[in-house]
Amino acid sequence: MRRERGQALAEYVLVLPLLLLLIFGIIDFAIVVLQYNTIANAAREGARAGVVVQGDVTDVVDAAESAAAVLTVGLDSDDLTITAMADAETISVTVDYTARLITGIIIEAVGGDAEIPLSSTATMRRE
Image (cartoon, rainbow, N blue to C red; front, side, top):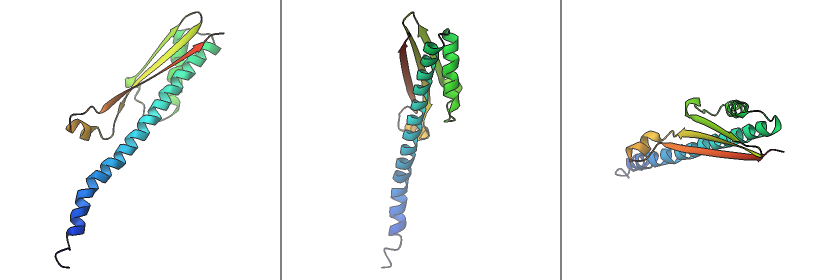
């Protein structure tokens, strides 16, 4: 009984880093999904603004930027790129964003990339 005294502590020390990596991986995944949903919504809102209002491309980009800024999910405006293309029949809005991971230090330590490029395009027909 006396020899097994430190066994629980040793097992805890071995399992804790794996458990923390799993938990932070789940948090990273949830944040990236939320950021993707935000940029997808911004692309849809920008295209909708171009279809409903029939404005020019700058109005579409402004509408997409305001839709991206509505939710406070930590989107960095420096990493957000919005492009809009319009012709007589359709309008297309593309929103690109570079997501940075919480576990980026660990990923870079093993040779990975701590940034994930996200992109969403919405195309709507003008009527």
